[in-house]
Each structure stands twice: as structure tokens, then as C-alpha cells.
Image 1: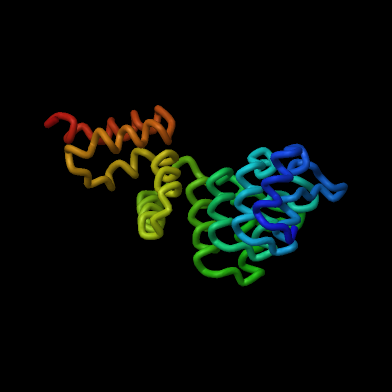
Image 2: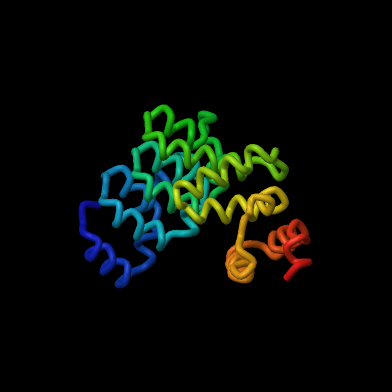
Length: 201
């Protein structure tokens, strides 16, 4: 896949099923873009067009995230895959390796490993200790990866709500954002932990 993004886009527009087609090995155009080190913008384009493929598990690779880690994809690609299917960070391939395990073997950059680690921590358990949730929020906030912030809030609203220090006037905007991005139970859980603020508004 040494073709430019314009060529890939033209091919997709002419025949969209081509980007979804699988080889006998189970590899798709997205897997091949990793293997042949296509430019990140081509990889991100394919990832955006193949949401179902990203959520598939195959005997060859387990998940697309495993494959991306194997071929040392940049952080922008790893983040895109985690956004579309965070639970992929927990999956194990036939050898018992998670994406983080593969990233570690490949000596991936610390940022890549840290992102996979924290997403896997957030997805691993329904109930987590306060310190872990707070550390995850701090990491994602510092990295300005708002998908991770919302993921953490969505999975652990009761703890995350206590970390908010929001001006009263901005509270409606925050709740509107959460309502568009998170489950209704998340918003309810946060409201239940903001009774002191709501009582004065």
C-alpha cells in the first residue's frame, strides 16, 4: 500500500467492498497498511472506513490493535484504534499476549505503552480504586486525549465526578458534553455525586 491517500480514497469511492476484503490469512487492507508501513494518514483513513474490521478477532492477529503494535504504528494510529474499540486492549492472542505485551516486546515508545496500559486499566474492572481512576484521568488530561477522559468518566462516574472542579456557569456545558458522549447512567451517577453543587444552583 504505497499508494497516496488520494489513490486509496478514489479506489474506496469506486468500490467500497475492496477495503473490507480479507485474504486467506484474514488480513485486510488495514493490516497490510501496517505491514508495508503506509503513511499514517493512509492508515487512519482505512481505520475510519473499517469500524467492523477493527472490532473483529482473527486467528492470525487476534485484533487489529495487536497488528498495529507488532508493526510499530505511531501513537496517532494507536489512539484511533483505542477510540473505536478500547476493549481490544484486553484481548489476548494465541500466544497469550495482549497489545501491551506486544508493544513491550517491540520496545514501543513509552507514550504508546502508557496509552494502552491506562485504557486497559479502565476497561479491565467495573469497580476500581479511587487512586487508579484519578491517575488515569490525570494521564489522559495531561495528554489532552479527551476520549480517554470521557472513557474514564463513563466507566467510573462515581469516582470521576469527585475530581471535577467546574465553575457553576460551565456545569451545563459539561453535562451536555457528557450527555452526548456517555451513557445516561453515567450522567445520572455524576449528578448524584454533585448534590452539593446542584443544591446551590
